[in-house]
Structures are given as structure tokens and as C-alpha cells.
Amino acid sequence: MPDMSASVSLAMTHFATFAKEVDEDKVTPGVLGFIVFAAMALAVWALMKSMSKHMNKVDFKESSDPEAGSEEPSAEPKARQS
Image (cartoon, rainbow, N blue to C red; front, top):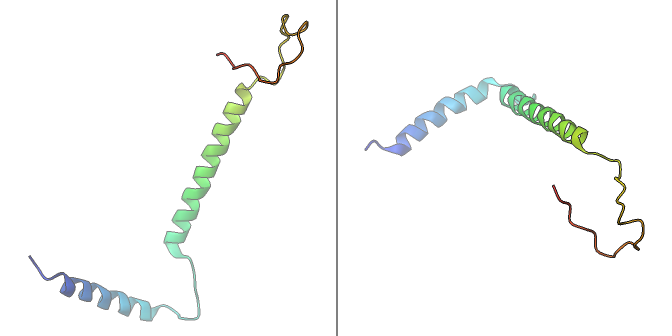
């Protein structure tokens, strides 16, 4: 099995030389930041579209129940039957 510390050391050496080329006074999110932001924006868009679809299925009109007219409203709500 090859020595892992040598591979890590070599990778860090290449990363450190790349980091020296970057302007130390300028901080940017980079490509990874853009990808994360775009993924989050797509997720929010999909959730909003799904929520809109589900909200359009909801019937906000209260149906009149012939039995409920003669009785007083109970403290416990009736279970919704589908």
C-alpha cells in the first residue's frame, strides 16, 4: 500500500503553489459558489412550483353539512375523510 502522507503532501504542495497565484486581497466565491447558489435557486424554484400546484388543489369553500345546522359546534374537530 503506498504511503498516503506522501500523496497528501504532494497534493498540498500543488495546492499551495496555486494559492500563491491568487491575489490575497481579493476574495471571490468562485465556480463552486456559483454552482451551490444555482442549485439552491433551482431547488427553491421547484419547491415554489410544487407548492403552487398543491395550493391550487385546496378547496377553500366550506361545504354545507345538513347535520351541522341543527347541532352546536363541538369542541373537537371532526377528522377529515378523504
